Image (cartoon, rainbow over all chains, first blue to last red):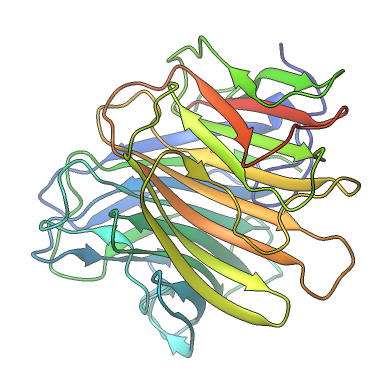
Length: 190
Length: 170
């Protein structure tokens, strides 16, 4: 069943073998916190991928989350995004941000969204272990509510050459990740 | 850390004869997410690619698209549909150039409604080719055990390949 040359259809576009894409850690929302952190990430992979099935307790239809690397709260992130809400499309860009991701396009269902609807996201962080490069991330995310919702693509740079050892996901509001929210971190070998 | 196979091919189908539908059935609930990769040519050009879950039609499907078509960008939405739709009216499939579609279906065996991220890459060397990124919703909390790929018309041509992968979490 398992071959050594699964075609490279991961978000990174990197050809992988079955054993080169490994689960590092998972987390589940508590309903009491808007923060999820993966820490002590080993430098044994080439790239990282985070897959999110998420929902927020935010008292609205939609929320969002951003990303922080190694706990860096400085203005060291850039954000660019392309988003569509089913009727119009827009683009967003900002330099010197304190978080990565996209603060402009919401896709995480909030408390008033129909029950059991979840938003989803795939985030790739390339060359995360390299100590000589700034770090680049991209995300493909969205949520659909049978009448509203959005489909979004974003990219971010973290202007720091340190190897990434922790990833923190933070809701972009006062909302918390619901107990139905799941987060999975994978390592991709090069 | 969970070592080893977390990204596994579940099944691959390469068509030796034209077919209107490609079906993956008896999908085990042993993974966290599913990933479907389809590269196809079709007997008739400009077809939409459809995807049904568990063989169910009705009106439980919807989607929101982010579209780059020719020289412009747009966003569209379809509500209360009978299936997922991977692409949009415009160029669609080709009889000669393979088009590339992928679907990430999250928590397919979970108890929430099912949400998928879909990409469609359609290029036949014309100005009006397209790239489509969409989020698709299937309002059902049942575990997904079957995926059916079909078209708005005609057949998938010989040589079309569809592969279903399973992704496990730790």
